[in-house]
Image (cartoon, rainbow, N blue to C red; front, side, top):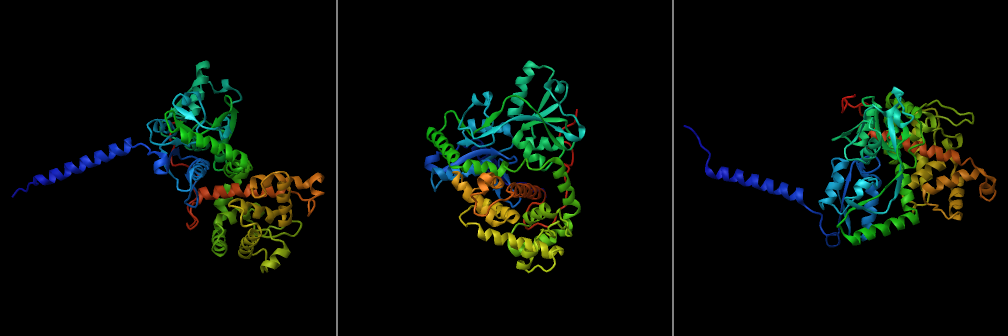
Length: 478
C-alpha cells in the first residue's frame, strides 16, 4: 500500500521555511539599537594581528578590542560592547553605512575614498605602507619602476588597493590584483612561504608578522604616511562621535593610549629575522624535551609555561648546562646566591632550574606594587630578574621626577637606560646600572612569548604538532 504525507506536514515545512527566511531577513537588515537607550555599543571590526583576535589563552585581545571596551566604560559603567566581525576589511565600511554598528574599530586608515562614505574620528596611530617581499627570493624593489610588470596582491577594498590605484594612474605599467577573500595577514604568510612575490602592508602589521614569518622582508615605502582612526556613519549619533573625540583626547594626555600601543606594538621590532628563525627552529627541535618541565613549573607557580619557556630561552637558549663567566648557570641562569635562597641544589639540573626560576619570578612580582596593572607588573618583575629590584625602583623614582608614569612599563623602559648616565645615576639611590640590558631582556621575552602563544595556543593544551607552512597557496603565483 502506498503511503502519502498528510497535508499538515507540508504546512509545517512551509511554515518553518518562512520562519527561517524571516529570521535571515531580520538579521541581515538589523540595525544597531539606540546606544543611549540600549546601553549597548555595537562595533564592527575584523580579525587581524594586533587589531581584534583570540590570543593564546583563548581570550579576546587586540588594540581595537581594548580601546572599544575602554570607550564603553568611559560612556558609563552600565554600557557594554557587542562586536560584529566582518569577514573581510572591504565589508567594514558597507556594514557601517547600513547602520549595523555605531562605529568601526578595524585598524582603518583615513583615506580620501573612505572619507566619502564615513566620518572619521580622532587619529590615534601613525602608519606607513610598505612593499612586503619574500627574503628568500631576494626580490626587494629599490624604486617603483622595479615593480613594473610584477604582480602585487592586496586585499580587496583595502587602503593598500586605494594607494596602488592612485600610483597606477600615473604609472600604467604597475600591476596589482585585489584578492576577494584573503586578509593582509594571510597574504603576508603567503609571501613568507614564497607562494606570492609581493604584497603591501602597514609597517606595524609587517613588524608583528615578521616575528612569526621570518622570510617576510619590509621593502620600500609607498606614498605618504597615513593615520588610523575609528569611523562613524555620516548620519550617525553626534553625541557618540563627540564622546569619542573627548575619549581619545583624554587617553592621549594621561598615557593610556601610549601604554596600549606599547602593549601590542612596543616590542615587535626587537628581534631580527635571524633571531626569529633560530627561535622557531629551536622550538621545533629542543623545546619539546623541556615542555613537561615548563608545564610542571606552571602548575607550581600559575605562570604560563610559555612565558617561563620564553624567559629560559632568553637566558640560556634552553641549554641546561649554560654557564656565564660570572658563574650564573643553568636553564634559568640562576646566581649561586639566588639558587641557595630557592633551595636549588643543582643549577644544571633542568627541573630544579626551571622550577626555581619560576618561583623567583613570583617572588619579584610580590615586590612590585600590587596596584600596577598587568601585564606591566610582570614586565617590571622580569626587568628586576635581569637587573635587580633596587635598580628597577630607581627607574620608577626617576620616571616620577620626569613627569612620567612609574607604574607604566612603556615609561619605565625609557628611564631604565638613563641609569648608565652620570647625570641620572649620581642622584639615584642605588647608583649606576646598565639599564639598557633589562629593556632588551624584557622586550625580547615579550616577542618570544607572542610566538609561542601563536604556535602553541592554550595553557592547558598538550604539545601540538609544530607546523609553519600553510597547506597550499591561496593564489596561483604569476
